[in-house]
Amino acid sequence: MELLHVVAFILGVAFVAGTLLSAVRTFVLPRAARPAITRVVFISVRSLFRLRTRRARSYEAVDHMMAMYAPIALLILPVVWMIFVGLGYMLIYWGVGIESWEYAFRLSGSSLLTLGFTQTIDMPTTLLAFSEAAIGLILIALLIAYLPVMYGAFSRREAAVSELEVRAGTPPSAVYLFELFNRLERFDTLGDFWSQWEDWFAELDETHTSLAPLVFFRSPHADRSWITAAGAVLDAAALAASTIDIPYEPRANLCIRAGYLALRHIADFFRISYDPQPKMDDPISISREEFDEAYDRLQSNGVPLKPDREQAWRDFAGWRVNYDTVLIGLAHLTLAPYAPWSSDRSILPQRTRK
Image 1 (cartoon, rainbow, N blue to C red):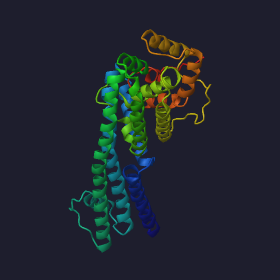
Image 2 (cartoon, rainbow, N blue to C red):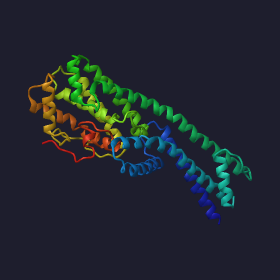
Image 3 (cartoon, rainbow, N blue to C red):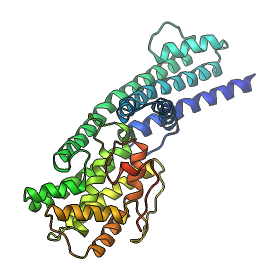
Image 4 (tube, helix red, strand yellow):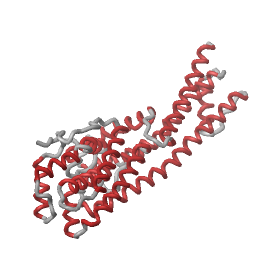
């Protein structure tokens, strides 16, 4: 019987330690981490939401449902942690000499929730009860402190997405962006635009890996998304570097690099596979016909283009290959709204360039 008590005590300590480690890696550790409890909670909640979205008849209905996914999963997470801590301490109490499982359960719940309706029997159980109460308060405090940080990052992300709507339309389009800049004769401001989005991608990289639930926080408007905005900006920078006949601007290249590195790091967190060393002639999801349509549209609207269309296509594809797979993978993961050259091919069979 003594052996069972020792095993129960060890299991209880393992439950509590594992739960605390999960909370620290989720809320405190300033780097990407995949704690098992957090991952299981989010995957389980997402599975339930997928059952609901399969019955939806419109994207608006899907977006309405999925808008609740991340907030609900975040609220369920501390509840699961509290349950694990409560079960762990129940085993610990039984292991140190409380023979009744019912009494151990009541003492654990009373201590964890700081209710105080169950009395301890000696000094060791009193100290354990104090530690359990402290852990319960710490878990709640972590969640309360975590939410303002998350919503601050969300607000900054969405402010840029909203500004992009003014320049790239709805849904965001790299082609429309250049048509507008050409009409307004604002090509001279593109350098600042690339710098702004390079900074945006840098913050995205930091926040959406260390605060992973942010990936699933949806925009206030159903037709906006951080991932389709990212795709439009990256395509615009790729067109600027390959196709648009304007003075060379290195900040466009830096924007592309910042963007595909950020998307790759987020894809790594969610285990989306991609080729980290793609070749310039590797297939991409944009077909040559689609590129030609964009080229003709820009040309008909007076946008200055490089005359060698074949070389422009090869250069564009050489830039796009760096972020093509991760862009589409993240659009599929987040069930992003329709946008050309990104989410429009995240579920349908992908087209490859010829």
